[in-house]
Amino acid sequence: MNTDSSGDQAADTEFRPATTAITAGRCANGTSLAPPLWSSSTWASASLADARKRATGHRSKEFYGRYGNPTVGAFEEAIAELEGAEDALAYASGMGAVTTVILALCGQGSHIVAQRQIYAGTLAFLQGPCRRFGIDVSIVDGVEPGAFAAAVQPGKTMMILAETPSNPLLELVDLDELGAIKGPFKVVDSTFATPLGQNPLRHGIDIVLHSATKGIAGHNDATLGVIAGERDLLNEIWSYGVLHGATPSPHDALNALRGVRTMAVRTAHQSGSALQLAKELAADANVVAVFYPGLPTHPQYDLAQRQMRHNGTVLSFAVTGGIDHAASVLDRLRLGRIATSLGGPETLVCHPATTTHASLTPDEQTVGGITPGLLRVSVGLEDPDDLVEDFRQAVRAVTA
Ligand SMILES: *Cc1c(COP(=O)(O)O)cnc(C)c1O
Image 1 (cartoon, rainbow, N blue to C red):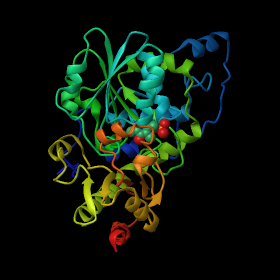
Image 2 (cartoon, rainbow, N blue to C red):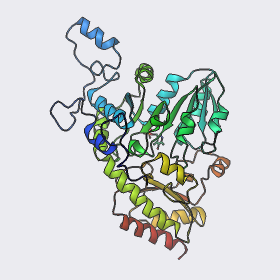
Image 3 (cartoon, helix red, strand yellow):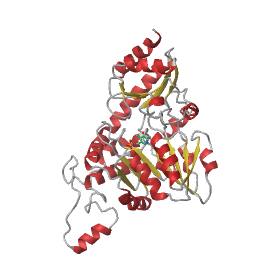
Image 4 (cartoon, protein in one colour):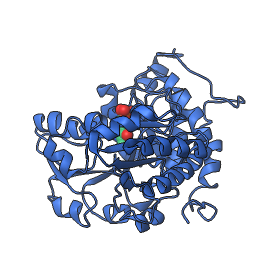
């Protein structure tokens, strides 16, 4: 069972992930247990030689805010350890990470293969600015076996961009299959899993990426992105990133590092509640479909058990009666708040067709399964019995 991490000790780290979440990211602490906040945007040098060293060295943490910051560095260290990576780099947002990675590694004439089931902001960036810059993009179905490999153009494809579990239908990409593809950089947006749910680098992926705004920070009080991978590759991305300027706020890095400390208990509680809620909804006559990797009815249930440590903190379900019934469920929920984002303490519910996926054409919505009755739930930290009761009364009332 994938919720049991007791046999999961990684070969190259000393501890299991929940312990690493406590021990990692203390490089800026001194003897303080809490990380100090370095709000400084510039640092003094002792001499011209010292100033030159700071200005020209790689990843200088005490030169100028855009180059690095000790508080941000502590957060990066924690994520690198949790992902089993040599290094990590934080950005001002998840999209700051996505755009920096793409523009650091691709240029005019390069080709990117991305999955159809990708974050709407990422898709908009690929289809808008990337094409405008002469970057060619192919969109494939990330669930279909062999689809990524078939779209690779040898010598031209620089990057494969995947996301698993995906938004909002929690579809999975087989990380072993993706990791085995030779040639392009393989980048995986692992936001929905958090570093405790899966570690794509262990499957041959080159860069794992998170919107740390979500489950990593975990309290809806930080906007932050992070990537992890091999140091040489990240140094190259860092050099571009200093010019791109999606620099993370040290305040947000501090909040995110505090989030890391409680991430294991939060994700365990939330994924447990999500499974309970998913089962309850699946048994409700007013629900036509439930999407959750922890349900044996999920078409990729076996893959989820194989590559994920927990089933995730987000589920989606579709009610009978389309948008009117979806609206009525939202109106009647007492605990589920109408809001986008995920991974925080409050249970949040959103209507993808009119919010996160509103930019898709009706055809794209149909192909993507974004039906009018679909609701996405980010399960919070409330008592699961209260949540189940809240959703039960809201969904039952639809046809009452
Ligand atoms: C939210 C999100 C992003 C973008 O992150 P921001 O912090 O909002 O910029 C990217 N990918 C996924 C899967 C997300 O959920």
